[in-house]
Image 1 (cartoon, helix red, strand yellow):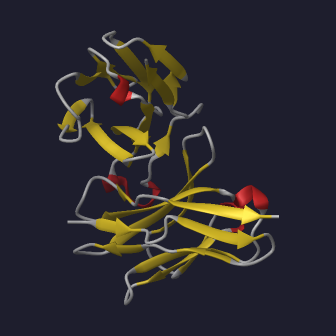
Image 2 (cartoon, rainbow over the protein chains, first blue to last red):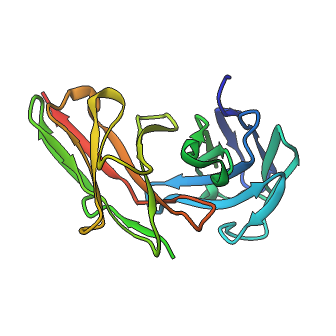
Length: 117
Length: 113
């Protein structure tokens, strides 16, 4: 398996533009997580899905952020409109269900470094 | 609720010396515990985990961690540090009644030559 795949690796956009980040989880993983990492706030959980259904989006900073998971192999995180304070590294991670026991653990993608100018 | 604390923002150690990165946790039940490492411009990578059994867990790159239930700790250790171990280390916990991991804020490990 190629692991969790995120695209693009780097994104530079102008303030006010729409940004879409993409994630392909590991096949067979039931859970998908979106994180944001900044120097100031560290690693923040934005939202997570179980079997393509959003379970907890309390970490989404505001209405400009939205996430979807139309099927088990694809998820997007969209920011519209983008602002300079959204500049961060965004990670996607996936995992098996915790009910599947000891193999539970997250596999992270390499991240998307977003710069909003 | 579940939580994890990494009391040190940064740990400095000389190459060849032993290293310890501290982690304490709080859960209402029995924990699953994890360590992840993040190298510059990379995602988090799994190092090791404690599920049950032997309190000393061995993982990748010569790292190990000791689960101490009475002290609610899961410190990461390595007998002899390498410069290439320099990275950001995250401890994470999951109470067996929860669906998700809770991550600590991370500890930067700097190994000097």
